[in-house]
Length: 152
Image (cartoon, rainbow, N blue to C red):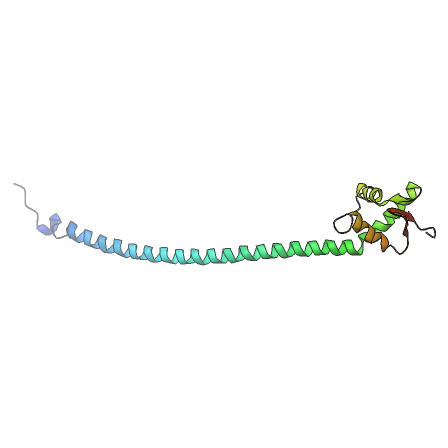
């Protein structure tokens, strides 16, 4: 008959499944608590990042609007400074090429056909106002009829 093994040799002194599951339960609870803390920290970081993102997007939007305003004002300033002289020069050329006086509407049409921007809304009244400030280069010879001054 075979010899019986002692309880220590058979492994009976090792902790049973109850003891292992107790340690596993403690370990799982610890890991769960750590994971909850990490999740809470990540959510807090996410909220902070979302706030920073929203502020950055708002700042970009405001700066984009300011740039658009500045660009618009810059182009208006360049029209006020540079384009009116160019407009008068081209108007004198058009009237001279026509061989005499021209109606205001015809002059406006020819300026637009040449790609010359008109002041303001581009109406006859806006063009008339600019012609009146031409320093006498373009003169009114009759109602709605304009010619190049003789001394030009």
